[in-house]
Amino acid sequence: MVRTDPAKRKKDQSTDSSLFSPDNLVGQKKVITKTLKKRSKRNTQKSGEVRTVAASIRSHFAVARKSTGAAMDATVTNTDAVSDLGTIADHANGGARTKVNTTVSASDLMEKLVFACGQLTKLTQTVEEMRGEIFGLRQENDALKQELVCVKRNEEKLKDDLSEAKQSATVARKRVNDLEQYTRRNNVRVFGVREADNETTTDCERKVLQMFRDKLGLTIKEDQIEACHRVGAAKGKPQRRATEQQQHHGKPRPIIVRFVSRKTTEAVLHIKRKLKTTAYMVVEDLTRDNYYLLQKCRDHPAVISAWSKRGNIYIKTENNRIVQISSTDDLLTVSGTAPVTSTPHSSDLRPRGFGRGRGRNRSQRSDGERRPGRNTDEVESDSDIGATGGSYM
Image (tube, rainbow, N blue to C red; front, side, top):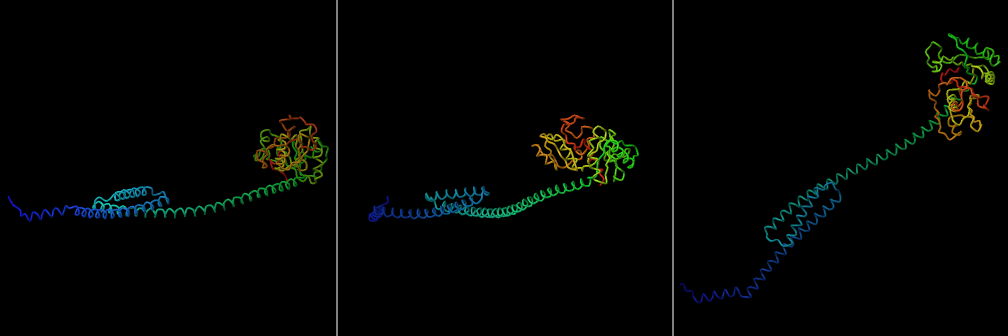
């Protein structure tokens, strides 16, 4: 058994008693507390820095999110990184438990921060590119708007020019028609004169003079006739312009007679009503447009009768009012019916024959019937005026 020195043992007991004395314990507690406070303060500072960086990144991504919605995937990724940073900051605020964990968290935070900065840079470049494209599209849109305004302005101008051209064409057509009708003032058309094979103009003239003498009691000399000929292709020749009625029914072609004097023409037309009971008929030589207008007047439901006199067209309405018609638009004043087209069609210019009762409203009158109070100058029947175009000019 080892025996210790009593003096040494007493010294050791005094040392242990001094180490665990209350004063010594209080001092050690203060040191430990101070050390912990320093570490906690240092960790708190690091946590504040992390939170500041996270808030900065959140603000940058908020601005980027408002600028464009084209990089939503990148924004979601970056938001996840920021959330991770917030989680790290929360852990740091509670106190970094170990120095190693704090160092690793700071390293991960820096890596994510660098990644987020790179994504933010790419997003900013994309936004700038999109802004440039939008600016270019706006410029192109403005240029197209200006071109559209110019096109509309030109279109309005063309419409005005077209309207003026139509009006001018209408006026010109009316003047030409009037001039053409004036050149026909000495002409008459004779229907019903029998036609022989190989007939000459001399034979034709002789037959007309004989008909005037026998049927009208009017003696006309040969020197009073400037020209006399039939209209249309002769028998046995190609029927280029002859009408269907002439081709299928074998009716004689009409004859155009051009007198030297207007007085002779008026004398013949004045007594033409003597031919009502015969197979002959004499009418004015109307132009193509005037003949078309005469047909439209006769087909109008509000017109009782229509005739021509000295190249002018007249109608009698249901109230026995006589009106001169210059164009198809004038028929609108007769009743509220729709206007008829003012341009004659080839099918509208076909003659309807020269039998009795023609030239009247066939839906109201039968052949051979005469309406009371009819104007004595009214044309008794239609002729093939305009269909053959055989006027002596």
